[in-house]
Image 1 (cartoon, rainbow, N blue to C red):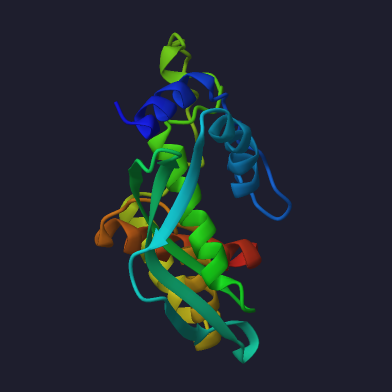
Image 2: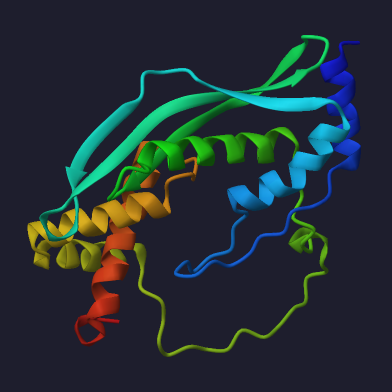
Length: 215
């Protein structure tokens, strides 16, 4: 067995969970690239391994419209991450999609870091050490009768169309960019991604104009 394979097998035994955390300005919990690297650094070194990311495509940097007529840098390419050992053996941990948006010059660097992070999380099946919701017993509760019923998909679609039509072109571009960033790493079909982006734009519109929301 090559040294890299022995090291990876031991690394999986030594690796501790990495919990998801909140970050300023973000409404959801996630594992940062720093948290992943901080946990992996010593474990990799103890097992005689290091990482070697390789960009597979030409660096694709596009300039797209942003807020207040500012240009946003959009980076898009693929990164393959290899684990390497002292005997010259190496093993591919997988390929990640590098994608990011930035008003400055950091889009490419952020994209590469994000791609590497998600490859490592998936390759090593890094746990969060959070409770498994599927393992909890289901408790039957009486569902109260609600007068404020949730809108049907057709009603919500109509609201989304109305909100989209009321925005200015600049507002549409800004909301679209924000929605795409939020869904950046979700694996969705084109149709599902389009619907989620559209719905998220509608949510953003009515969040700023609660008096206009029909339900």
